[in-house]
Image (cartoon, rainbow, N blue to C red; front, side, top):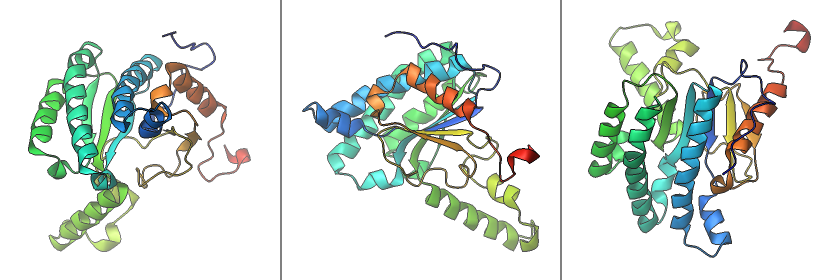
Length: 247
């Protein structure tokens, strides 16, 4: 596959954190007369190349919406295939992640994962814990409403334990109780597959992210597409509620 052309992006203004909704695996497969599982298999190859180009461009955090809490409601056969595919793919890619200094972590409800998946994933996270390059974050068994509800419960418990008063709660308090505590909010959200929604993904953290929707299904999303998204991001003026004159 042809390498991406980086000449049209400013390497000094690359988004620190890119979040991706990897949509369209099933539709990609169905459009080719294949079983949906074939799309998920091909989607793993896209994860590899996008991780490579994100690292090459200097992105520090790449969060991939891998499996939502709503996905547990899919047909059991598809869920089982996805769980085995995700775990097997991560195990296979872990040596390359280590060679490329990529640290692998996860946000989501680990308790809902099958025991075999949780145990094997924990080993992969531990094996890459020393890496200091790109942080590859898998949103796995994740939804933003689950995350925010859990944060509210934790904050209420802390108030009841006398750790702080209700009037002391700030935006920073909430952020500190989310799965992404310590991780900067995404600068850029990319969604493949053409749908214009964020599907219960990082609702709190995406407040000021730039959003780019592409019609490409995830298996067709290339390194050049990723670079082009960064170029589009760099052409935008991020005002954060201010006027252009105030910037």
